[in-house]
Image 1 (cartoon, one colour):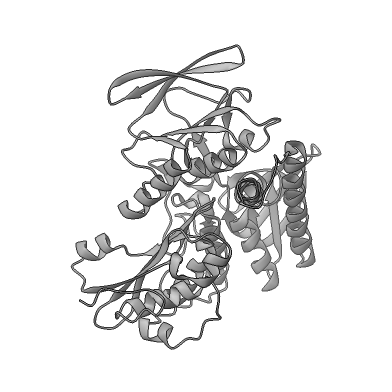
Image 2 (cartoon, rainbow, N blue to C red; image 1 turned 180 degrees about the vertical axis):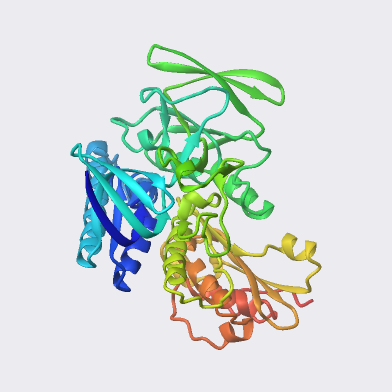
Length: 467
């Protein structure tokens, strides 16, 4: 067994982990990162990067096939589509590795566990063991899925979201269980390839983290594109395949229902993963399945921190990155004193959704006096030139100060445009500040500008009520 010491030991090479490791090394900390699988974590290998690659490519296929100037039938090489996705993942993974090494981070491939609050033993992939003593330890160990009713993926007819990224052929029919972010994105992806898709959701509406209005508009979009959505429906059993199809037993508001399909995707719920860490050896214990931490993301064991999915919901890569930076700043004694960052919530697909901050309902519950500015993409020149003018932008602001309290977008490139709102809110900009800003024309960003104008009844490219 080899021994070493370091200033910072990071367990987990996902967005939160590699960010903490890179920032620590940049600031002069002797840093070791331990990863048992592939660098990049779920986001890069089985989440954000591969899903968004496939969503973008399949959306292009869908739009070209249905464009008014397309004549004849287009053939899709599904194998090459998947190969391109894997190439993007590999290039991204190698890029992260080179940035880590270039900043002086030592990468250890293996599985880490505590043997005291400041020491961990790493069982390396090559069979060796390394004992590491660290002044500070960051746990970026991610999350794991859990499925209801004893159901589990088999990798054949019943898939988890990892396996759904590696299908060998396009299914004729598909049932997606769960209408959260991953559910609607996978539904859109395979719908774009011609699969007949049904989404089932146990709750009474899809995308439960969205406000009622946005969730309702997104459901209408799915239905308009012939993706069937069944709320208040639970999958209770899966029967054996017959004739290359699987039978699903679903519980609905009207009793049980049987449905046959080629394949099923179980999205599952996600929970923080601390498997194999031996947290007791560090003096830590779970509270309702999660490790407790303070405002600095430090656990009850001094010098041991959590970042990313290990901190629990929401499971967002950009949250993990922000937390990785925050932890290293705290270790270095560089507390900024700024308020916590705003984390935008994004859904990708043919129609994108992004939201940050308060909704109108939130403001009403808090008895806030607000203004609401709304502008629709149909009034935006750039949206019309690209043929994607569905949806709009809503800004919520304080009626007295003009401070932006929330932004909610549904439409083309909303996941990019939400950064304008997040930037404005984090830096306490007002509606007046936005109205003074010159936006290029034609550009989708003008919808944000026009929504600010609409807050005071001044929108240019949309007729407003004269109330």
